[in-house]
Image (cartoon, helix red, strand yellow):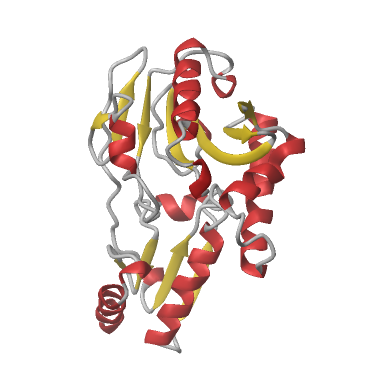
Length: 260
């Protein structure tokens, strides 16, 4: 039997049993989970549940995470009553193509229309999402399109009670303090954020063992992220556009930036 429930302080670990089911004892992942647990408890206190968990026979098998833009301290001029859909994730092969993720999305969208706890039981104007690919199963952009999402400005959107308002991405303007160093931002909203940032640090140190690398949690220091135009990685006062998963392309871009 499939049931969907809002996360509570007592079921936070169920979210980790979904997203980190195969890394629960990994030291780096445990630190990421600790940071996310702290963040989740803060969200529950200040806004209410921002995650729904799908259970099959009481086993947590999938989750959806969302929050108001106004809850994010590093979004400049957040749009009013707009929900940011961060992710929908079902990692278990035995529960894929069985309607689990669809049930999560339908429940979420119904609440967006009827009233979300994170919006004080009010309906939202529209939902935005920036789908990313985990390399597992269905393309997320295609999945969102099934529910009526459209292409917006550097994001996808679903209108609920209001019209979509676009937002342009931030621009990085070089600042002197970034010269000769590296700044990596990681989002504790995902427990993989910290381990990903440490992997980025490791690869950059392989490119240049002498360069100073600073990891920053933008939830704690939003002003640092804002003044860099919300660019997640800045190397020697240059924003990096590739990702560590792109291997040689990422290393080459980092090496070129370090040359100045």
